[in-house]
Structures are given as structure tokens and as C-alpha cells.
Length: 399
Image (cartoon, rainbow, N blue to C red; front, side, top):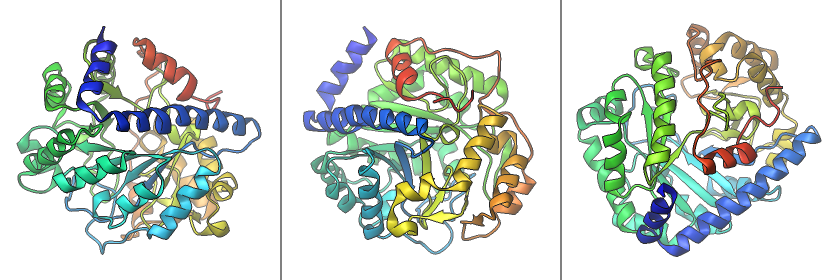
């Protein structure tokens, strides 16, 4: 019944052409991409079916715990490099790309990238403040992107978390423009101590549905970067409670609820450790994931052949082996010492502008992540369970 209600919501509130683009470019082609990924693993080649690209370090906000150098001179990855990167990945079956920043919409060529690749699907991680009616209209015309808009709780909490005044109001303006133009619209929240009571509750899910949001994604706050703010990190009990809340709401509410850190049996996983996703930093460096700002390769290597660069990367291979051997959770949180050893073994360079990533890593203390053996909460919704079992699980990384 809930799934039927959700389907009705999608049909009534979105453009049918956008739904087709989503179903085909992301759904069907995404599944095929994962199958190719699994076949490559058997050959000893790990090239992720899902690439996440931080296209700029520029941003209009100054969020707590941000690891991107948004307060430094703004840089963007040139359109020619982005276009070559996407084309190179498409040759190996990729069709889905996560677009991050900074704030992606400060990049002058983002819409140009979407138009250049109508056969792909893009998820844009944004604070929503730059989404106007004109921009939302352009996104609808392109048809192959979903804005995933970050909301961090109440107005007061948002101002503190995002480092600006009236953040929530401006973000909601962008969300309302997205919904008004019938875009598939998502909301992401980095759940932490200051917003936990605001967002981990049923009325918040009801409010998202009322606003016209189609899906939501709960991340847990990770204390990394130059101002890590570890006091915001969730306690282990809160992480488990959040997981159970997500499972319950999936069965009761007509809205998509994403999580990327558990398999169908509720066991923790790290997408980078499984190899299903890796990250391109805002200066073109090839990194294990967005919060690990070290690299030995860039998108310029091998004439721009990203498949060759990633499949031959000793750093990425060592990271996957070390991370999967240490924990099913987040090695950055649980074992920063092991991550430091990986970086040192390969002489990986600090990819930040501040050049303090190694000192930050050395100063980190071990803390719990989503991996809590014996407390697994398996998926209950049949559709999520089926999708995770076949297209988003451990891929043998933890055997």
C-alpha cells in the first residue's frame, strides 16, 4: 500500500519525461553498470559504477565540519575535463554521477554538462540557495538531474550549522522552486547532536512529504576537516536508533528514504571499501571518498582515461583492502591510524589547499561508526531489500 501511495505521488507531482529519464538512465542502466562492475571484480579490476565528482571548492555557506576549502580562492574543474571524464566512464557502462562541491551550482558549466550527456543521470548535492525558478526550469528542460537539497534542521540550528543567517528560508525557496517545476527533489540531512531531535522523528518525514519532497537521505555527521567539531558526532545508540527509524519510516511513509551504509541484512558497509564508488576532488584528484583528501593520481593521468587510472591505482587498491580488512564501517572514524599508514605507504599527496590534512588525520581519535556487530537491523521493505541484495551490498569485500 505504501509503495502504491509513493508511486501515485511521483506520477502526480513530477514530469513524466523526468521519471522516464530517471527510470532508464539511473534505474535500468545503473543496474547494468553494477552487473558490469561485478564482472570486472572477478577479473581483478575495480572500477566503480558510481562516480562522485566535486566540481568546485566554491560555496556560499560556511558549514560546521566542512572538509572542503570553501574559504580559499574558488576553483572549478574545467568543462573540458568534466566532459572527458564522463565520456571516459560511459565507455565502461557508467551512467550515474553524483555532483558535489562546495556548492555545485556556482560552477558556470554545470547545466552545460547535463545537456552534453542526456544519456546519463546526475544527482546534485546542493544547499538549494541558488535554485531559482529560471534554474529549476532549465533543470526540468535538461531532464536528467535531481537536486538533493541539504537541510540541517530548524531555522536556528541551520544558521549555526551552515554559518549564515536565514539559511533555512533561502534553502526552502530553492526546494519550493524545484517542486514547483516538477523536478524529482530530494532532501539530505547530516544527522548530528544539534539536529537529531528535529529530524529523527515522524513529524519531520510528514513535513517533507507536505513540502513535496520525493526522497530523503540521512547521513551521520563525520568529524573531519580543519574544524572537525567532534561534539556533534552521534553516540552509538543514536546511530542504531537512526537506522531503525529509517527502516520503520520506509514501511509507513510514501517517500523514498536512502541510506548507503548498510546491506540488505543490515550489516554495515563502506561504499569506497566495496569499490562501488570513489571520488574526484575539486582539483581533479582521484580519492577513495570525499572525506579522504589524499591522492596519487588525477583525472589528467593516462590521457584522461579514468578507467585505466582507477583500475591501476595502487592507492585505491590498498585502501579497499585495508578498509575492508579492518571494519565494515568507516575506517576514517574507527581506524584513522590505518588510513594514515595507507597514505604514507604510497606517498599520497595532500589534495587540500590548506595542506593540513595529514595533521588533521594524525590528530583524529578512534570513534564508533555504523559498524556495531550483533546489533544489525535488516531491511524490512521488500523493494529496498531486493535492490540492496543485488545492486548495493558487500560485493565480496568483507569475505
